[in-house]
Image (cartoon, rainbow, N blue to C red; front, side, top):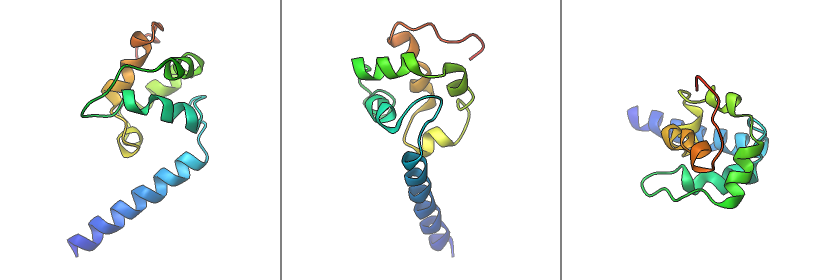
Length: 99
């Protein structure tokens, strides 16, 4: 029974990720923007954000992104929230207060 639940959960996460990615406009970030930043916000070996990622972060609604800080959505997409919160300073962008 537990194995079936795990399989169902994995399948649902895959479907959910596909749905989110198919319709993404998350806080003014497109799917392409998210993919440009994913290497910088994915463990175990994150890289420095690329110029394309920083451009995306500059156009993002950062207060909106802050609302996802403690959400399960980011980890479900393979994004480490702690690393994601480091993007604005790494891109020389002032993060919103109280984020």
